[in-house]
Length: 133
Image (cartoon, rainbow, N blue to C red; front, side, top):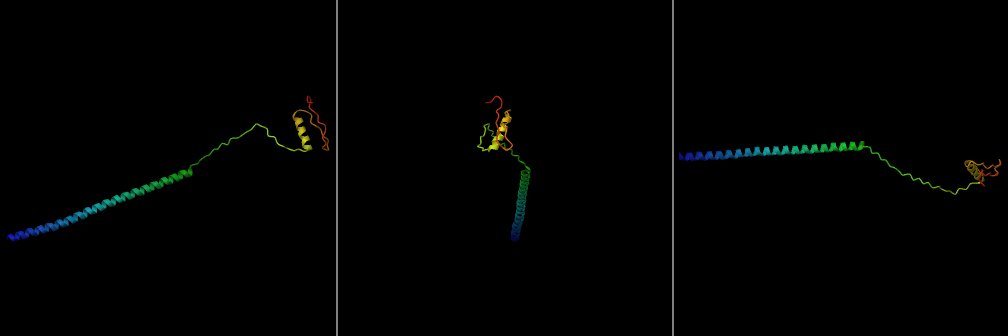
């Protein structure tokens, strides 16, 4: 009978070892599935964060484009004007008729009597205004 007890104890021990083996496998599988699930959730969260960052970057870029397109710049340039008070002399050649017209204009401006000329274009006497000789 002792032999049966040893045999029974040995079978129970083997059964416990086999049970522990399968229990360990099932526990390890469940732990591995939990780790995989956690890794998938983490990668999904990272992916969602990347998508959100990309979308916010796109929105910022679109807003910057709209602002750049609607911004109006006004450029005012002041150009200095140079005014010289000196008289500019020119070498102007005027024919006899031009000289007579200029003399009449000068005499009329000075209040004197304008030189007279004939209807055929001949130069007449130039009369000096009063007080000039």
